[in-house]
Length: 126
Image 1 (tube, one colour):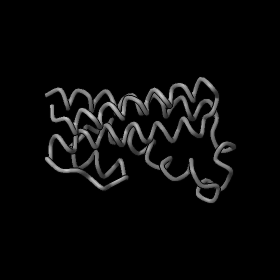
Image 2 (cartoon, helix red, strand yellow):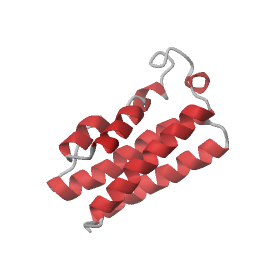
Image 3 (tube, rainbow, N blue to C red):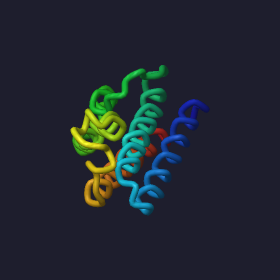
Image 4 (cartoon, rainbow, N blue to C red):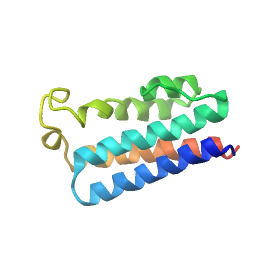
């Protein structure tokens, strides 16, 4: 595995762990952000491995489609994608981010991020 791919997967794993910790601390909006970040970094590791170059995209759906990811991964990306912006800006979520997230939302996003991470991990082991 190229060092760059390894580094991106490690960063994704760190973000997934950060999301888990934030979930346990009931900081749900930040958990959602780190879920999106974990998925993005994991997908970028696969992108680098497959395409031999970096991706400047932040759109998880576009990255997953470029990687010919299975439909369940693209679906997970559709759930995670909006949280890159909505978790950070009050005007993006039409609410203060901490008020726009709850345990159910964060738990779902954590599961989706794990799905994307696990799929990406399998792709980078090839």
